[in-house]
Amino acid sequence: MSEAIPTHKRSSRDPGELRERLACWLGARIQAPEITALSSPSASGMSSETLVFDVRFQDAGALRTGSFVARLAPDPRDVPVFPLYDLETQFRVMRLVAERSRVPVPRVRWLELDPVHLGSPFFVMERVVGRVPPDIMPYNMGSWLSEAPPADQERLQDATVAVLAELHAIDRHGTDTSFLEFPISGATSLARHIENQRRYYAWMQDGRRHPVLEHCFAWLDANRPRDEGPAVISWGDSRIGNVLYDGFEPVAILDWEMAALGPRGLDLGWLVFMHEFFEGVARMMGQPGMPGFLRRDDVAAHYERVSGHAVPDLAFYELYAALRHGIVMARIHARRVHFGEAEWPAEVDSVIPHRETLERMLDGSYWKR
Image (cartoon, rainbow, N blue to C red):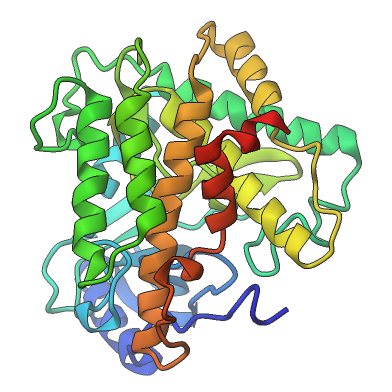
């Protein structure tokens, strides 16, 4: 079990020092702050650092309390998952989404780009109370979601897909979304998105080649959708593990670091594949998983019902999601090597947990299930 779902070290920062420096920084924004609780969640996420903290402070002579979340760019010494952590873009897109839609996002409060305060840039948002489908152990194995009645699972699935439809419906005319476009040449937003992934793969290689990932890039080049549709605001990391739920309804959409402009299929493909990824983990561990949840056809049909838009070539976007996640997982293994938790095997593709899925996608057998 520990081999299938390893626990990863996330940071080398000192929690006590972070607490003192954060309190000092808050003192310039609220009166007499006292941090009464501070923690760093570890059940989900592997990229940015997250601090959850409660504060007691003075406001016009009255004692008040507040609960907040800080997102920090990782320390470069900790082998970050991504080459760039543009916290200003995350801050701006969350504010834009809150202003231009009914997508539930936490209220962002402060953005700090000067790394002198906590050792890296960060932003602070208000904390939203809810429950999240966990990554460790995965939500499809004995969690509140996998144990819920099928009707409630479907309710959560449909409500999450509806959030994507609401996000993609944001009218980009009259508002600046240029900060979400990759500064890369390319005829379409999808072409620029894929080129950005090529550059990410090249950055994370560090002298190692992953043949299965390179075969995926070749497949994408040969199978581009004929009509990708208009570019919309894409959440990027559109999986249910990045959603806080009240019951089975989304109350906060989190983790916007992969946000960009792109086709609707980017978010739908990622949503479907990420569940399949955890289904693969369940099968490997001899668990039943949730095979009737977030199925491609169900997701596509409900998205079309609530948005009025069909998303053709969803298999293309699902394979693209699997490739993107493969790059991330290879980089996460590099982090484990850095922290002394693992070594590089002779066959580097073996560090990609869903390598077999990628191979079956490429040979076509995956789609005949």
